[in-house]
Image (cartoon, rainbow over all chains, first blue to last red; front, top):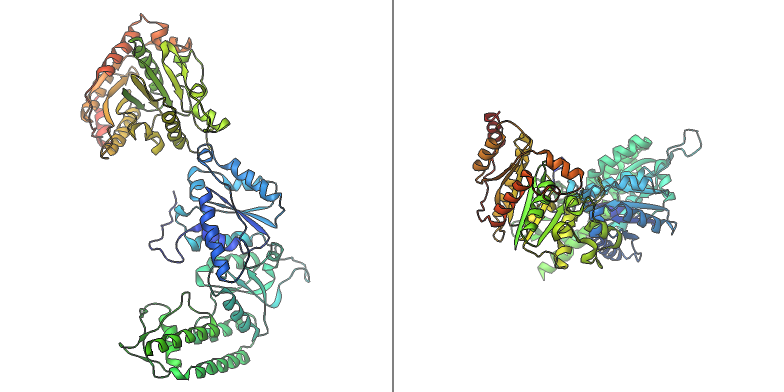
Length: 355
Length: 270
Protein backbone atom coordinates (compact mmCIF):
# COMPACT_ATOMS: atom_id res chain seq x y z
CA UNK A 1 0.00 0.00 0.00
CA UNK A 2 1.36 3.38 -0.95
CA UNK A 3 1.95 5.66 2.01
CA UNK A 4 2.11 8.75 -0.19
CA UNK A 5 -0.74 11.14 0.46
CA UNK A 6 -2.71 12.24 -2.56
CA UNK A 7 -2.43 15.95 -3.43
CA UNK A 8 -5.01 17.93 -1.49
CA UNK A 9 -5.54 20.59 -4.12
CA UNK A 10 -5.50 20.71 -7.86
CA UNK A 11 -2.77 23.06 -8.98
CA UNK A 12 -0.44 23.29 -11.90
CA UNK A 13 2.08 21.23 -9.99
CA UNK A 14 -0.52 18.68 -8.93
CA UNK A 15 -2.41 16.51 -11.36
CA UNK A 16 -1.11 13.68 -13.49
CA UNK A 17 2.18 11.97 -12.68
CA UNK A 18 2.33 10.69 -16.23
CA UNK A 19 2.13 14.20 -17.71
CA UNK A 20 5.00 15.35 -15.49
CA UNK A 21 7.23 12.53 -16.71
CA UNK A 22 6.23 13.07 -20.33
CA UNK A 23 7.20 16.72 -20.16
CA UNK A 24 10.75 15.45 -19.56
CA UNK A 25 11.00 12.42 -21.83
CA UNK A 26 9.57 14.24 -24.85
CA UNK A 27 12.33 16.84 -24.38
CA UNK A 28 14.76 14.23 -25.69
CA UNK A 29 14.25 14.55 -29.41
CA UNK A 30 15.43 11.16 -30.64
CA UNK A 31 13.51 9.21 -28.00
CA UNK A 32 10.13 7.53 -28.19
CA UNK A 33 7.95 7.29 -25.08
CA UNK A 34 5.61 4.33 -24.72
CA UNK A 35 2.73 4.91 -22.34
CA UNK A 36 1.79 1.48 -21.05
CA UNK A 37 -1.92 1.75 -20.58
CA UNK A 38 -5.16 2.38 -22.46
CA UNK A 39 -4.97 4.59 -25.54
CA UNK A 40 -6.79 7.41 -23.75
CA UNK A 41 -3.89 8.09 -21.40
CA UNK A 42 -1.63 8.69 -24.40
CA UNK A 43 -4.24 10.63 -26.36
CA UNK A 44 -4.95 13.10 -23.59
CA UNK A 45 -1.27 13.73 -22.90
CA UNK A 46 -0.30 13.91 -26.54
CA UNK A 47 -2.94 16.58 -27.11
CA UNK A 48 -1.70 18.60 -24.15
CA UNK A 49 1.95 18.34 -25.17
CA UNK A 50 1.27 19.12 -28.81
CA UNK A 51 -0.82 22.18 -27.99
CA UNK A 52 1.82 23.49 -25.57
CA UNK A 53 4.68 22.89 -27.97
CA UNK A 54 2.78 24.76 -30.69
CA UNK A 55 2.17 27.60 -28.22
CA UNK A 56 5.94 27.91 -27.94
CA UNK A 57 6.21 28.23 -31.74
CA UNK A 58 7.77 24.82 -32.05
CA UNK A 59 6.43 22.57 -34.77
CA UNK A 60 7.52 19.14 -33.63
CA UNK A 61 5.27 16.20 -32.93
CA UNK A 62 5.89 14.61 -29.52
CA UNK A 63 6.93 11.01 -30.06
CA UNK A 64 4.45 9.28 -27.81
CA UNK A 65 2.95 5.86 -28.33
CA UNK A 66 0.42 3.83 -26.38
CA UNK A 67 0.67 0.11 -25.68
CA UNK A 68 -3.09 0.28 -26.29
CA UNK A 69 -4.23 -1.85 -23.39
CA UNK A 70 -7.66 -3.35 -23.82
CA UNK A 71 -9.90 -5.19 -21.38
CA UNK A 72 -8.22 -8.38 -22.60
CA UNK A 73 -4.83 -7.06 -21.41
CA UNK A 74 -6.31 -5.99 -18.09
CA UNK A 75 -7.64 -9.49 -17.45
CA UNK A 76 -4.64 -11.49 -18.66
CA UNK A 77 -1.92 -8.94 -17.88
CA UNK A 78 -0.54 -6.27 -20.17
CA UNK A 79 3.09 -7.38 -20.27
CA UNK A 80 2.81 -8.94 -23.73
CA UNK A 81 1.17 -5.80 -25.11
CA UNK A 82 4.05 -3.77 -23.71
CA UNK A 83 6.67 -6.06 -25.17
CA UNK A 84 5.00 -5.86 -28.59
CA UNK A 85 5.06 -2.06 -28.38
CA UNK A 86 8.73 -2.03 -27.39
CA UNK A 87 9.63 -4.28 -30.32
CA UNK A 88 7.61 -2.12 -32.70
CA UNK A 89 9.24 1.05 -31.50
CA UNK A 90 12.74 -0.43 -31.44
CA UNK A 91 12.47 -1.31 -35.14
CA UNK A 92 12.61 2.44 -35.78
CA UNK A 93 15.97 2.55 -33.96
CA UNK A 94 15.28 5.48 -31.63
CA UNK A 95 18.06 6.93 -29.47
CA UNK A 96 16.28 5.65 -26.37
CA UNK A 97 12.88 4.19 -25.54
CA UNK A 98 11.09 5.36 -22.45
CA UNK A 99 8.30 3.33 -20.88
CA UNK A 100 5.89 5.01 -18.50
CA UNK A 101 3.40 3.00 -16.49
CA UNK A 102 -0.16 4.15 -15.83
CA UNK A 103 -2.71 3.78 -13.05
CA UNK A 104 -4.27 0.67 -14.57
CA UNK A 105 -0.99 -1.20 -15.13
CA UNK A 106 0.08 -0.44 -11.57
CA UNK A 107 -3.33 -1.64 -10.34
CA UNK A 108 -3.21 -5.02 -12.03
CA UNK A 109 0.45 -5.45 -11.09
CA UNK A 110 2.16 -5.64 -14.48
CA UNK A 111 5.90 -6.05 -13.86
CA UNK A 112 6.79 -3.22 -16.21
CA UNK A 113 10.38 -2.95 -15.04
CA UNK A 114 11.03 -6.66 -15.67
CA UNK A 115 9.61 -6.38 -19.18
CA UNK A 116 11.86 -3.43 -19.99
CA UNK A 117 14.89 -5.24 -18.56
CA UNK A 118 14.19 -8.31 -20.71
CA UNK A 119 13.49 -6.36 -23.89
CA UNK A 120 16.99 -6.76 -25.28
CA UNK A 121 17.04 -3.11 -26.36
CA UNK A 122 17.86 -0.02 -24.30
CA UNK A 123 14.71 0.97 -22.44
CA UNK A 124 14.34 3.39 -19.55
CA UNK A 125 11.31 2.86 -17.32
CA UNK A 126 9.67 5.51 -15.16
CA UNK A 127 6.90 4.41 -12.73
CA UNK A 128 4.07 6.92 -13.15
CA UNK A 129 0.95 5.37 -11.64
CA UNK A 130 -0.66 8.55 -10.32
CA UNK A 131 -3.06 7.00 -7.83
CA UNK A 132 -0.09 5.92 -5.70
CA UNK A 133 0.16 9.47 -4.38
CA UNK A 134 2.18 11.05 -7.16
CA UNK A 135 1.47 14.27 -8.98
CA UNK A 136 2.91 16.25 -11.89
CA UNK A 137 6.00 17.22 -9.89
CA UNK A 138 6.62 13.65 -8.77
CA UNK A 139 6.47 12.41 -12.36
CA UNK A 140 8.71 15.29 -13.45
CA UNK A 141 11.38 14.56 -10.81
CA UNK A 142 11.19 10.78 -11.27
CA UNK A 143 11.73 11.15 -15.00
CA UNK A 144 14.69 13.52 -14.56
CA UNK A 145 16.32 11.06 -12.17
CA UNK A 146 15.62 8.09 -14.45
CA UNK A 147 17.03 9.93 -17.47
CA UNK A 148 20.09 11.10 -15.53
CA UNK A 149 20.91 7.46 -14.79
CA UNK A 150 21.50 7.00 -18.54
CA UNK A 151 24.52 9.33 -18.44
CA UNK A 152 27.94 7.73 -18.49
CA UNK A 153 29.76 8.14 -15.18
CA UNK A 154 32.61 10.62 -14.91
CA UNK A 155 35.81 9.01 -16.20
CA UNK A 156 38.39 8.70 -13.42
CA UNK A 157 41.38 9.35 -15.72
CA UNK A 158 42.42 13.03 -15.87
CA UNK A 159 41.69 14.56 -19.23
CA UNK A 160 39.06 11.95 -20.10
CA UNK A 161 35.48 13.05 -19.68
CA UNK A 162 36.38 15.22 -16.68
CA UNK A 163 34.20 18.02 -15.44
CA UNK A 164 34.65 21.19 -17.44
CA UNK A 165 35.05 24.31 -15.36
CA UNK A 166 33.18 27.25 -16.78
CA UNK A 167 29.95 25.53 -17.76
CA UNK A 168 26.64 24.94 -16.05
CA UNK A 169 23.66 22.65 -16.59
CA UNK A 170 20.07 23.83 -16.45
CA UNK A 171 18.07 21.14 -14.67
CA UNK A 172 14.33 20.67 -15.07
CA UNK A 173 13.28 23.56 -17.25
CA UNK A 174 9.50 23.62 -17.37
CA UNK A 175 9.04 22.55 -20.94
CA UNK A 176 5.30 23.16 -20.75
CA UNK A 177 5.56 26.80 -19.62
CA UNK A 178 4.97 29.54 -22.14
CA UNK A 179 8.21 31.43 -21.55
CA UNK A 180 10.59 28.49 -21.46
CA UNK A 181 12.87 29.93 -24.15
CA UNK A 182 12.87 33.46 -22.72
CA UNK A 183 13.75 32.06 -19.30
CA UNK A 184 16.56 30.02 -20.80
CA UNK A 185 17.95 33.06 -22.60
CA UNK A 186 17.85 35.07 -19.40
CA UNK A 187 19.77 32.49 -17.36
CA UNK A 188 22.23 32.13 -20.21
CA UNK A 189 22.74 35.91 -20.21
CA UNK A 190 23.23 36.05 -16.46
CA UNK A 191 25.81 33.24 -16.31
CA UNK A 192 27.60 34.74 -19.31
CA UNK A 193 28.27 37.82 -17.13
CA UNK A 194 30.58 35.43 -15.25
CA UNK A 195 31.99 34.02 -18.51
CA UNK A 196 30.13 30.76 -17.92
CA UNK A 197 28.40 28.82 -20.67
CA UNK A 198 25.48 26.40 -20.73
CA UNK A 199 26.71 22.81 -21.00
CA UNK A 200 23.32 21.08 -21.20
CA UNK A 201 19.63 21.87 -20.95
CA UNK A 202 18.46 18.81 -19.07
CA UNK A 203 16.03 17.86 -20.60
CA UNK A 204 15.01 20.32 -23.29
CA UNK A 205 15.56 19.82 -27.00
CA UNK A 206 18.46 17.41 -26.52
CA UNK A 207 19.39 13.96 -27.83
CA UNK A 208 20.23 10.68 -26.13
CA UNK A 209 23.96 11.23 -26.67
CA UNK A 210 23.72 14.73 -25.16
CA UNK A 211 22.71 13.10 -21.86
CA UNK A 212 26.29 11.83 -21.53
CA UNK A 213 27.38 15.47 -21.13
CA UNK A 214 25.35 15.75 -17.93
CA UNK A 215 28.32 15.03 -15.58
CA UNK A 216 30.63 17.51 -17.34
CA UNK A 217 29.31 20.79 -15.94
CA UNK A 218 30.78 22.23 -12.77
CA UNK A 219 27.42 23.47 -11.49
CA UNK A 220 23.76 22.48 -11.86
CA UNK A 221 21.09 25.17 -11.78
CA UNK A 222 17.67 23.79 -10.87
CA UNK A 223 14.55 25.40 -12.30
CA UNK A 224 12.89 25.51 -8.88
CA UNK A 225 13.46 24.33 -5.29
CA UNK A 226 10.95 21.48 -5.69
CA UNK A 227 13.66 19.75 -7.75
CA UNK A 228 16.10 19.58 -4.84
CA UNK A 229 15.75 15.78 -4.83
CA UNK A 230 17.02 15.75 -8.40
CA UNK A 231 19.85 18.12 -7.44
CA UNK A 232 20.83 15.82 -4.58
CA UNK A 233 20.74 12.80 -6.88
CA UNK A 234 22.98 14.46 -9.46
CA UNK A 235 25.35 15.59 -6.74
CA UNK A 236 25.65 12.06 -5.40
CA UNK A 237 26.05 10.62 -8.90
CA UNK A 238 28.52 13.09 -10.40
CA UNK A 239 29.62 15.28 -7.51
CA UNK A 240 28.09 18.37 -9.14
CA UNK A 241 26.90 21.03 -6.67
CA UNK A 242 23.67 22.85 -7.39
CA UNK A 243 21.75 26.06 -6.99
CA UNK A 244 18.13 25.37 -6.17
CA UNK A 245 16.30 27.89 -8.36
CA UNK A 246 16.36 30.11 -11.42
CA UNK A 247 16.68 33.79 -10.40
CA UNK A 248 13.50 35.51 -9.21
CA UNK A 249 13.13 39.20 -8.34
CA UNK A 250 15.53 42.13 -8.24
CA UNK A 251 17.74 41.21 -5.31
CA UNK A 252 17.07 37.54 -6.03
CA UNK A 253 18.70 37.92 -9.42
CA UNK A 254 21.74 39.57 -7.88
CA UNK A 255 21.92 36.80 -5.26
CA UNK A 256 21.75 34.28 -8.05
CA UNK A 257 24.78 35.84 -9.76
CA UNK A 258 26.63 35.89 -6.45
CA UNK A 259 25.79 32.22 -5.71
CA UNK A 260 26.78 31.02 -9.15
CA UNK A 261 30.07 32.92 -8.88
CA UNK A 262 30.86 31.56 -5.43
CA UNK A 263 29.99 27.96 -6.41
CA UNK A 264 32.16 28.35 -9.49
CA UNK A 265 35.12 29.89 -7.63
CA UNK A 266 34.75 33.23 -9.42
CA UNK A 267 34.54 36.84 -8.29
CA UNK A 268 30.98 38.18 -8.69
CA UNK A 269 31.80 41.90 -8.38
CA UNK A 270 32.04 42.88 -12.04
CA UNK A 271 28.94 40.89 -13.01
CA UNK A 272 26.96 42.34 -10.11
CA UNK A 273 27.88 45.91 -11.02
CA UNK A 274 26.90 45.26 -14.62
CA UNK A 275 23.55 43.73 -13.67
CA UNK A 276 22.71 46.47 -11.15
CA UNK A 277 23.33 49.04 -13.85
CA UNK A 278 21.16 47.04 -16.25
CA UNK A 279 18.33 46.88 -13.71
CA UNK A 280 18.55 50.64 -13.06
CA UNK A 281 18.27 51.32 -16.78
CA UNK A 282 15.16 49.16 -17.01
CA UNK A 283 13.48 50.83 -14.03
CA UNK A 284 14.28 54.22 -15.54
CA UNK A 285 12.50 53.08 -18.68
CA UNK A 286 9.33 52.69 -16.61
CA UNK A 287 9.56 56.06 -14.86
CA UNK A 288 6.18 57.00 -16.39
CA UNK A 289 4.58 54.59 -13.91
CA UNK A 290 5.94 56.43 -10.89
CA UNK A 291 3.29 57.39 -8.30
CA UNK A 292 0.65 55.26 -10.01
CA UNK A 293 -1.84 53.81 -7.48
CA UNK A 294 -1.76 50.04 -7.39
CA UNK A 295 -3.10 47.24 -5.28
CA UNK A 296 -1.55 43.86 -4.59
CA UNK A 297 -4.02 41.03 -4.11
CA UNK A 298 -1.41 38.40 -3.42
CA UNK A 299 -1.32 37.42 0.31
CA UNK A 300 1.62 38.71 2.34
CA UNK A 301 2.58 35.17 3.38
CA UNK A 302 3.01 34.15 -0.27
CA UNK A 303 6.74 33.77 -1.07
CA UNK A 304 6.23 35.94 -4.15
CA UNK A 305 4.89 38.87 -2.13
CA UNK A 306 8.28 40.35 -1.19
CA UNK A 307 9.47 39.95 -4.79
CA UNK A 308 6.53 41.97 -6.09
CA UNK A 309 6.68 44.69 -3.46
CA UNK A 310 10.39 45.07 -4.13
CA UNK A 311 9.71 45.66 -7.83
CA UNK A 312 6.75 47.91 -7.12
CA UNK A 313 8.85 50.12 -4.84
CA UNK A 314 11.80 50.12 -7.22
CA UNK A 315 9.76 51.90 -9.87
CA UNK A 316 7.91 54.14 -7.39
CA UNK A 317 4.39 52.67 -7.48
CA UNK A 318 2.11 53.61 -4.59
CA UNK A 319 -0.03 51.00 -2.86
CA UNK A 320 -3.61 52.05 -2.29
CA UNK A 321 -6.89 50.18 -1.62
CA UNK A 322 -8.31 52.04 -4.63
CA UNK A 323 -5.34 51.22 -6.85
CA UNK A 324 -5.26 49.06 -9.95
CA UNK A 325 -4.79 45.40 -9.26
CA UNK A 326 -1.43 44.34 -10.61
CA UNK A 327 -1.37 41.03 -12.50
CA UNK A 328 1.35 38.58 -11.51
CA UNK A 329 2.22 35.92 -14.08
CA UNK A 330 2.53 32.29 -13.04
CA UNK A 331 5.17 30.99 -12.82
CA UNK A 332 6.93 34.06 -11.50
CA UNK A 333 9.09 35.76 -14.19
CA UNK A 334 12.73 34.74 -14.32
CA UNK A 335 15.56 37.21 -13.84
CA UNK A 336 15.76 40.86 -14.81
CA UNK A 337 14.34 40.21 -18.27
CA UNK A 338 11.34 38.55 -16.69
CA UNK A 339 10.83 41.60 -14.48
CA UNK A 340 10.97 43.79 -17.58
CA UNK A 341 8.26 41.71 -19.29
CA UNK A 342 6.12 41.93 -16.17
CA UNK A 343 6.59 45.71 -16.02
CA UNK A 344 5.34 45.96 -19.59
CA UNK A 345 2.30 43.96 -18.51
CA UNK A 346 1.75 46.30 -15.56
CA UNK A 347 2.05 49.32 -17.81
CA UNK A 348 -0.59 47.92 -20.19
CA UNK A 349 -2.85 47.20 -17.22
CA UNK A 350 -2.46 50.72 -15.81
CA UNK A 351 -3.05 52.33 -19.21
CA UNK A 352 -6.20 50.26 -19.74
CA UNK A 353 -7.48 51.25 -16.29
CA UNK A 354 -6.76 54.94 -16.96
CA UNK A 355 -8.55 54.77 -20.31
CA UNK B 1 -35.92 -18.11 -12.87
CA UNK B 2 -34.00 -18.45 -9.64
CA UNK B 3 -30.39 -17.31 -9.53
CA UNK B 4 -28.42 -18.53 -6.55
CA UNK B 5 -24.79 -18.07 -5.56
CA UNK B 6 -22.72 -20.21 -3.24
CA UNK B 7 -19.95 -18.36 -1.45
CA UNK B 8 -17.52 -19.58 1.19
CA UNK B 9 -13.92 -20.10 2.22
CA UNK B 10 -11.60 -21.77 -0.25
CA UNK B 11 -11.55 -25.58 0.14
CA UNK B 12 -14.75 -25.70 2.19
CA UNK B 13 -16.59 -27.73 -0.45
CA UNK B 14 -18.48 -25.14 -2.46
CA UNK B 15 -17.84 -26.83 -5.79
CA UNK B 16 -18.79 -30.28 -4.44
CA UNK B 17 -21.95 -28.85 -2.90
CA UNK B 18 -22.77 -26.82 -6.03
CA UNK B 19 -22.30 -29.76 -8.40
CA UNK B 20 -24.38 -32.11 -6.26
CA UNK B 21 -27.02 -29.43 -5.78
CA UNK B 22 -27.21 -28.87 -9.55
CA UNK B 23 -27.38 -32.62 -10.17
CA UNK B 24 -30.18 -33.03 -7.62
CA UNK B 25 -32.11 -30.08 -9.05
CA UNK B 26 -31.70 -31.49 -12.57
CA UNK B 27 -33.11 -34.80 -11.34
CA UNK B 28 -36.28 -32.88 -10.56
CA UNK B 29 -36.53 -32.04 -14.24
CA UNK B 30 -35.36 -28.47 -13.83
CA UNK B 31 -33.22 -26.67 -16.42
CA UNK B 32 -29.99 -25.85 -14.58
CA UNK B 33 -27.02 -23.68 -15.53
CA UNK B 34 -23.97 -23.88 -13.27
CA UNK B 35 -21.30 -21.19 -13.63
CA UNK B 36 -17.95 -21.66 -11.94
CA UNK B 37 -16.61 -18.24 -11.00
CA UNK B 38 -13.14 -19.25 -9.92
CA UNK B 39 -9.95 -19.15 -12.01
CA UNK B 40 -9.14 -22.69 -10.87
CA UNK B 41 -12.04 -23.83 -13.08
CA UNK B 42 -13.04 -27.05 -11.31
CA UNK B 43 -16.59 -26.18 -10.28
CA UNK B 44 -18.33 -28.26 -12.95
CA UNK B 45 -15.78 -31.04 -13.26
CA UNK B 46 -17.86 -33.71 -11.48
CA UNK B 47 -20.87 -32.85 -13.65
CA UNK B 48 -18.66 -33.34 -16.73
CA UNK B 49 -17.29 -36.79 -15.78
CA UNK B 50 -14.00 -35.30 -14.63
CA UNK B 51 -13.45 -33.13 -17.67
CA UNK B 52 -11.98 -29.68 -17.24
CA UNK B 53 -14.08 -27.82 -19.77
CA UNK B 54 -12.58 -24.90 -21.74
CA UNK B 55 -13.24 -21.69 -19.87
CA UNK B 56 -14.70 -18.45 -21.14
CA UNK B 57 -11.40 -16.71 -20.44
CA UNK B 58 -9.48 -19.49 -22.26
CA UNK B 59 -11.51 -18.73 -25.35
CA UNK B 60 -11.17 -14.97 -24.98
CA UNK B 61 -7.42 -15.33 -24.47
CA UNK B 62 -7.00 -17.33 -27.67
CA UNK B 63 -9.70 -15.94 -29.95
CA UNK B 64 -10.82 -12.65 -28.45
CA UNK B 65 -14.41 -12.08 -27.40
CA UNK B 66 -15.89 -10.76 -30.64
CA UNK B 67 -16.75 -14.10 -32.24
CA UNK B 68 -17.33 -16.23 -29.18
CA UNK B 69 -20.23 -18.64 -29.58
CA UNK B 70 -22.26 -20.33 -26.88
CA UNK B 71 -21.05 -23.79 -27.96
CA UNK B 72 -17.44 -22.65 -27.39
CA UNK B 73 -17.98 -21.96 -23.71
CA UNK B 74 -21.07 -23.86 -22.52
CA UNK B 75 -21.09 -27.65 -22.21
CA UNK B 76 -23.81 -30.09 -21.24
CA UNK B 77 -23.12 -32.38 -18.30
CA UNK B 78 -25.01 -34.79 -16.07
CA UNK B 79 -28.77 -34.76 -16.66
CA UNK B 80 -28.50 -31.83 -19.05
CA UNK B 81 -26.93 -29.42 -16.56
CA UNK B 82 -25.36 -26.65 -18.66
CA UNK B 83 -21.85 -25.97 -17.42
CA UNK B 84 -19.73 -22.83 -17.78
CA UNK B 85 -16.37 -22.03 -16.22
CA UNK B 86 -15.31 -18.39 -16.14
CA UNK B 87 -11.60 -19.21 -15.78
CA UNK B 88 -9.12 -16.39 -15.52
CA UNK B 89 -5.58 -15.27 -16.13
CA UNK B 90 -2.50 -17.30 -15.26
CA UNK B 91 -1.73 -17.07 -11.53
CA UNK B 92 0.22 -13.94 -10.69
CA UNK B 93 -0.74 -11.80 -13.67
CA UNK B 94 -3.64 -9.62 -14.73
CA UNK B 95 -6.95 -9.12 -12.98
CA UNK B 96 -9.13 -12.19 -12.33
CA UNK B 97 -11.94 -10.02 -10.98
CA UNK B 98 -12.24 -8.19 -14.28
CA UNK B 99 -12.32 -11.63 -15.94
CA UNK B 100 -15.45 -12.49 -13.97
CA UNK B 101 -17.10 -9.24 -15.03
CA UNK B 102 -16.17 -9.89 -18.68
CA UNK B 103 -17.54 -13.46 -18.44
CA UNK B 104 -20.90 -12.23 -17.22
CA UNK B 105 -21.08 -9.65 -19.99
CA UNK B 106 -20.34 -12.32 -22.60
CA UNK B 107 -22.88 -14.77 -21.15
CA UNK B 108 -25.51 -12.06 -21.07
CA UNK B 109 -24.73 -11.02 -24.65
CA UNK B 110 -25.08 -14.63 -25.80
CA UNK B 111 -28.37 -15.06 -23.97
CA UNK B 112 -26.95 -17.88 -21.83
CA UNK B 113 -28.37 -16.68 -18.53
CA UNK B 114 -31.64 -18.53 -18.67
CA UNK B 115 -33.25 -21.71 -17.33
CA UNK B 116 -35.10 -22.61 -14.15
CA UNK B 117 -32.16 -22.13 -11.79
CA UNK B 118 -28.70 -20.66 -12.31
CA UNK B 119 -26.10 -21.74 -9.77
CA UNK B 120 -23.08 -19.45 -9.37
CA UNK B 121 -20.15 -21.13 -7.61
CA UNK B 122 -17.88 -18.30 -6.49
CA UNK B 123 -14.36 -18.49 -5.08
CA UNK B 124 -13.75 -18.24 -1.37
CA UNK B 125 -13.26 -14.62 -0.51
CA UNK B 126 -14.75 -11.62 -2.23
CA UNK B 127 -11.27 -10.21 -2.80
CA UNK B 128 -12.34 -7.42 -5.15
CA UNK B 129 -15.36 -5.96 -6.86
CA UNK B 130 -15.14 -8.47 -9.71
CA UNK B 131 -15.89 -11.41 -7.43
CA UNK B 132 -18.91 -9.59 -6.07
CA UNK B 133 -20.27 -9.46 -9.63
CA UNK B 134 -22.64 -12.43 -9.17
CA UNK B 135 -24.28 -10.46 -6.36
CA UNK B 136 -24.47 -7.26 -8.37
CA UNK B 137 -26.37 -6.09 -11.42
CA UNK B 138 -29.33 -8.33 -10.65
CA UNK B 139 -27.54 -11.63 -11.24
CA UNK B 140 -27.67 -13.86 -8.15
CA UNK B 141 -30.45 -12.72 -5.86
CA UNK B 142 -30.08 -15.53 -3.34
CA UNK B 143 -26.73 -16.08 -1.67
CA UNK B 144 -25.96 -19.25 0.28
CA UNK B 145 -22.98 -19.31 2.60
CA UNK B 146 -21.14 -22.61 2.67
CA UNK B 147 -19.20 -23.03 5.89
CA UNK B 148 -17.97 -25.56 8.40
CA UNK B 149 -17.57 -24.93 12.12
CA UNK B 150 -13.96 -23.88 11.70
CA UNK B 151 -13.29 -20.32 12.76
CA UNK B 152 -11.63 -19.31 9.49
CA UNK B 153 -14.53 -20.68 7.52
CA UNK B 154 -17.01 -18.74 9.65
CA UNK B 155 -14.79 -15.69 9.30
CA UNK B 156 -14.97 -15.92 5.49
CA UNK B 157 -18.75 -16.41 5.63
CA UNK B 158 -19.06 -13.39 7.91
CA UNK B 159 -17.04 -11.31 5.41
CA UNK B 160 -19.42 -12.26 2.63
CA UNK B 161 -22.26 -11.06 4.87
CA UNK B 162 -20.55 -7.68 4.92
CA UNK B 163 -20.55 -7.61 1.11
CA UNK B 164 -24.24 -8.57 0.95
CA UNK B 165 -25.14 -5.98 3.57
CA UNK B 166 -23.23 -3.28 1.68
CA UNK B 167 -24.81 -4.21 -1.65
CA UNK B 168 -28.30 -4.34 -0.13
CA UNK B 169 -28.05 -0.62 0.61
CA UNK B 170 -28.09 0.13 -3.11
CA UNK B 171 -31.53 1.05 -4.30
CA UNK B 172 -31.84 -1.41 -7.17
CA UNK B 173 -29.95 -4.32 -5.64
CA UNK B 174 -32.06 -7.35 -4.86
CA UNK B 175 -29.30 -9.58 -3.55
CA UNK B 176 -30.16 -11.18 -0.19
CA UNK B 177 -28.85 -13.88 2.08
CA UNK B 178 -30.84 -17.08 1.51
CA UNK B 179 -29.27 -19.21 4.21
CA UNK B 180 -26.27 -21.07 5.55
CA UNK B 181 -25.18 -24.53 4.47
CA UNK B 182 -22.97 -26.35 6.95
CA UNK B 183 -20.57 -28.63 5.14
CA UNK B 184 -19.30 -30.63 8.09
CA UNK B 185 -15.68 -31.18 9.02
CA UNK B 186 -16.74 -33.61 11.74
CA UNK B 187 -16.06 -31.15 14.55
CA UNK B 188 -17.65 -31.44 17.94
CA UNK B 189 -20.72 -29.21 18.39
CA UNK B 190 -20.33 -28.11 14.78
CA UNK B 191 -23.99 -28.07 13.81
CA UNK B 192 -24.93 -26.18 16.97
CA UNK B 193 -22.21 -23.61 16.35
CA UNK B 194 -23.20 -22.98 12.73
CA UNK B 195 -26.87 -22.89 13.73
CA UNK B 196 -26.13 -20.19 16.31
CA UNK B 197 -23.89 -18.30 13.86
CA UNK B 198 -26.72 -18.35 11.32
CA UNK B 199 -29.16 -16.88 13.83
CA UNK B 200 -26.77 -14.17 14.92
CA UNK B 201 -26.20 -12.97 11.36
CA UNK B 202 -29.98 -12.83 10.85
CA UNK B 203 -30.25 -15.93 8.71
CA UNK B 204 -30.91 -19.63 9.20
CA UNK B 205 -29.11 -22.93 8.80
CA UNK B 206 -30.92 -24.46 5.87
CA UNK B 207 -29.05 -27.74 5.82
CA UNK B 208 -26.34 -29.70 7.58
CA UNK B 209 -24.28 -31.86 5.23
CA UNK B 210 -22.51 -34.59 7.20
CA UNK B 211 -19.00 -35.64 6.31
CA UNK B 212 -19.28 -38.85 4.32
CA UNK B 213 -16.75 -41.07 2.58
CA UNK B 214 -19.13 -41.39 -0.39
CA UNK B 215 -18.26 -37.84 -1.41
CA UNK B 216 -14.58 -38.74 -1.66
CA UNK B 217 -15.32 -41.95 -3.56
CA UNK B 218 -17.59 -40.13 -5.99
CA UNK B 219 -14.91 -37.55 -6.70
CA UNK B 220 -12.34 -40.28 -7.28
CA UNK B 221 -14.76 -41.71 -9.86
CA UNK B 222 -15.15 -38.20 -11.30
CA UNK B 223 -18.86 -38.03 -10.59
CA UNK B 224 -21.26 -36.28 -8.31
CA UNK B 225 -22.65 -38.29 -5.40
CA UNK B 226 -26.05 -38.12 -7.08
CA UNK B 227 -24.66 -39.92 -10.12
CA UNK B 228 -22.14 -42.24 -8.40
CA UNK B 229 -24.25 -43.42 -5.48
CA UNK B 230 -27.83 -42.34 -6.14
CA UNK B 231 -29.22 -44.55 -3.43
CA UNK B 232 -26.74 -43.46 -0.75
CA UNK B 233 -27.83 -41.48 2.33
CA UNK B 234 -25.49 -38.68 1.19
CA UNK B 235 -27.34 -38.41 -2.14
CA UNK B 236 -30.48 -38.06 -0.06
CA UNK B 237 -28.91 -35.18 1.83
CA UNK B 238 -28.19 -33.32 -1.41
CA UNK B 239 -31.70 -34.01 -2.70
CA UNK B 240 -33.11 -32.64 0.52
CA UNK B 241 -30.93 -29.53 0.14
CA UNK B 242 -32.12 -29.16 -3.46
CA UNK B 243 -35.72 -29.32 -2.32
CA UNK B 244 -35.20 -26.53 0.18
CA UNK B 245 -33.26 -24.34 -2.25
CA UNK B 246 -35.85 -24.80 -5.00
CA UNK B 247 -38.65 -23.58 -2.78
CA UNK B 248 -36.85 -21.21 -0.43
CA UNK B 249 -38.43 -17.78 -0.25
CA UNK B 250 -37.02 -16.56 3.04
CA UNK B 251 -34.29 -14.07 2.29
CA UNK B 252 -32.70 -11.59 4.67
CA UNK B 253 -30.24 -8.72 4.90
CA UNK B 254 -27.49 -10.12 7.13
CA UNK B 255 -25.99 -8.53 10.22
CA UNK B 256 -22.30 -9.44 10.12
CA UNK B 257 -20.57 -10.01 13.46
CA UNK B 258 -17.51 -8.15 14.60
CA UNK B 259 -14.36 -10.23 15.00
CA UNK B 260 -14.51 -10.36 18.81
CA UNK B 261 -18.11 -11.55 18.72
CA UNK B 262 -17.27 -14.20 16.16
CA UNK B 263 -14.32 -15.47 18.17
CA UNK B 264 -16.22 -15.63 21.43
CA UNK B 265 -19.03 -17.48 19.65
CA UNK B 266 -16.53 -20.09 18.44
CA UNK B 267 -15.21 -20.37 22.02
CA UNK B 268 -18.67 -21.19 23.31
CA UNK B 269 -18.87 -24.34 21.21
CA UNK B 270 -15.39 -25.81 21.73
